[in-house]
Length: 437
Image 1 (cartoon, rainbow, N blue to C red):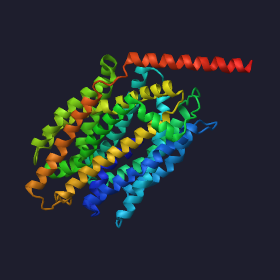
Image 2 (cartoon, helix red, strand yellow):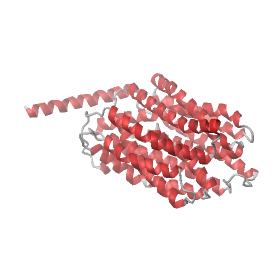
Image 3 (cartoon, one colour):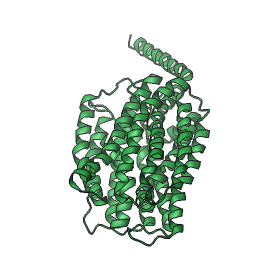
Image 4 (cartoon, rainbow, N blue to C red):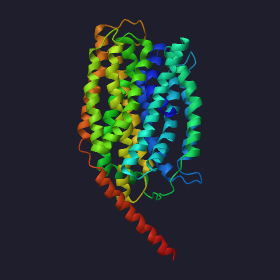
């Protein structure tokens, strides 16, 4: 739950606060996020490689999560509660620290989740529950500020930033403590002997993984073009600057409601087809925002609900499909390299977020949009914001749906893959026993 404070809310609230309140340019903020993500090309593979090879009495995933927690707490707190004279250097240092911590935590965390079950359908249930709780984290990031706004009249961008910063330093240590003390770590894995660069080559030859990761990158880029623009769209196009958290509360509520629906649908028609249908649904709904203007906040809520419902599949299904792809690699290579795959996935997710945000903020800056409230933005500036928020994401959603539609790993093929892995593991076990005798 608290990890999701570091994903969507960072991209929603940080760019607007640091540009509108602290005066940093849109283009500079967009380039900072992009550079910080590019650095993950080095850190993600290394953390994935080392996590797969970590051997401690406590497990191979827990130590990385615990080590990354204090870095994340400090970086997030300083990012969301900056001093009044904070500038570009402060923002950049906090982003770099936050993304390093995310790498240290998320790669072992997602790898750990993939190792909890080998069953095709149960993996969807696990990732569905985890995604639903993550979405609840996003809802809390909007809901708690709404409570403060309604009960105490404490609202606005600064208030949201302060509330989120305090929520993080309370909830993340609690969440990590529960995870590392209550969740079992599997010991049923084969030590990976594949060198890192050979492993990356094998990963690239994995056709289903390439198709899945390209689909994810395109869809994630589409989502992340819209993410930093939500607060600008609600504040400047609709004229409701304090209502961004209300709109996002509707989005994430429908997001969480959608997760069990998409999990059930994936069991009926296959994960890849359910994933594609969700892209088509949001691709149809999102362009309707184009027709909204000043005073239309409540008219955008039905579209937000549909978009959030469709996004429930994006939260639950790709991670389950990713675990299936790792089984294919295990069947071919004989190694368990889950964290290496999650490192590649994590880098793609973070790069997509950076590229989407970079496109949004740079194009907004290039067209001459001024983020400060009360600025004299022309009709052309506002229309540019409308088009940027609606059209490019929808095109990318349809492209992602087309790519994943005929994804080759079905439930039946996965069952054959697992049977092959189990037969090989049995042969290895018999060989070890024979050698011992």
